[in-house]
Image (tube, rainbow, N blue to C red; front, top):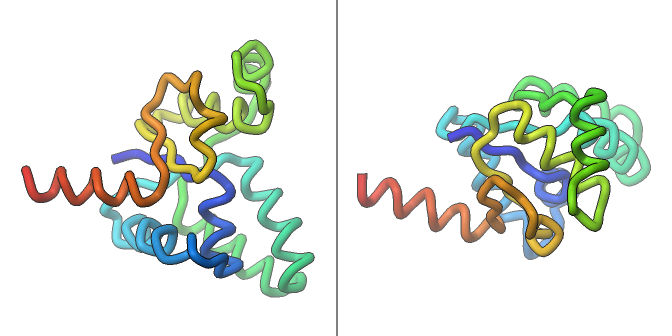
Length: 142
């Protein structure tokens, strides 16, 4: 189950943003236990470093980045991804980049709290609680 996590899901965990952090933490624990192959976009790494440095300081940000790099496959952002994102019908370019990076890296799903901006996605897009329910449903039926 190759799943790309939007930046907001990672930040929910790292910054303990209630009420979202519980579902996000549960999903990241599935990545940690290799029940989900987790992907994050390369741009997510730089955004998280910037925001966690501001919120938590440089040392904490560096620790978080090292942890993310050990847990997740990084979906690259290259010319093709950027060109396809530019041509996509997404209203938000950052979300278009994330979507194209997911497609080009082989992810099967996207998890975000911002599903409205992914209405043109060719991949299934879930909010965290929806994805948890889908995982549990698959487990109970399989």
